[in-house]
Amino acid sequence: MHTIAALYHFTRFPDPAALRDPLLELCEREGIRGTLLLAREGINGTIAGPRAGIDAVLAHIRSLPGCADLEWKESTSDHPPFARMKVRLKREIVTMGQPDVDPRVRVGHYVEPREWNDLIRSDDVVVIDTRNDYEVAIGSFEGAIDPGTESFRDFPAWWEANRERFHNKRVAMFCTGGIRCEKSTNYLLGQGVEDVYHLKGGILRYLEEVPEAESTWQGDCFVFDNRVSVGHGLREGPHLLCHGCRRPILPEDRARPEYEEGVACHLCAHETSPEDKARFRERQRQIRLARERGESHLRA
Image 1: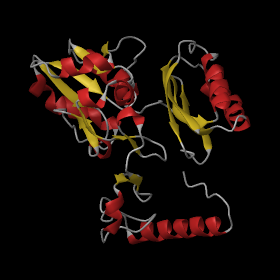
Image 2 (image 1 turned 180 degrees about the vertical axis):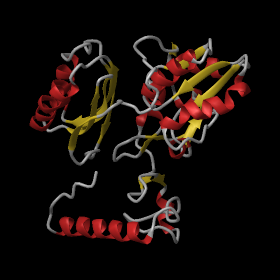
Image 3 (image 1 turned 90 degrees about the vertical axis):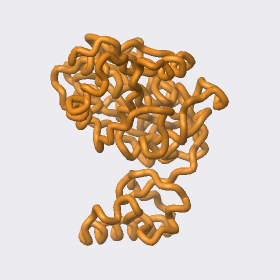
Image 4 (image 1 turned 45 degrees about the vertical axis):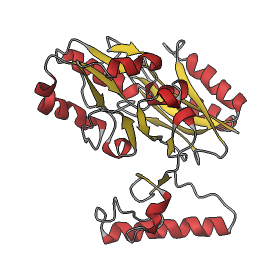
């Protein structure tokens, strides 16, 4: 059984590059795989591995400057959710492209999962999904607005174009684990919105804590690992990943004429060039050869 820990923490790292190698070496020594992002504004990522290894890495992260009160969400998987370990240096741990946004200064009101349903059912509340369009496509909260953004960087422009729709409304926002809402609620407060709320712990905590019979969640939640999606109780969902576009698809989508394993699906077949598809086919061939040799191909 593999323990999965999803985490983020906003703090100030004067020299994130100095933190990278010791963190990567510890993860590799403990048999941990996944991705961690380091930036001057903090740390973000998801890791998986044996229980003892996860505990060791979390203890190390909590020892970093300003990270003593780190929180994380755990789940499990029967198979390894990641192929390798990556620790990357970034300008932002979640990219919004707004230099004045700083969640350490202030964020919206946190709403516990068991209080979320009552809030979003209020007549004066508008509910906004801050995730990307392909994530929203497989599941969201009942009545939530989908901004249709391709990346989180697009959210500020969407808000500017639509803000008048939400005049005199309280705004409740949510995302997968909570990190995007840390920035989006700070952004809205800076735009003069007075009553801003966000789901504490994100969709993952809601699916873990709220019984399915009481839930207002519809569908599945996309996750950025080999499970692809999870549902209530954080049970692994039915989705697969198209390795051409990294979007979630259902098993029956493999029967569509546009589908070619590792190359394209019905969502992306029209988006990539013949040269792209040729490159993807070669990658798929290398994966097949590696499997025949009994080796693991590091695609993830």
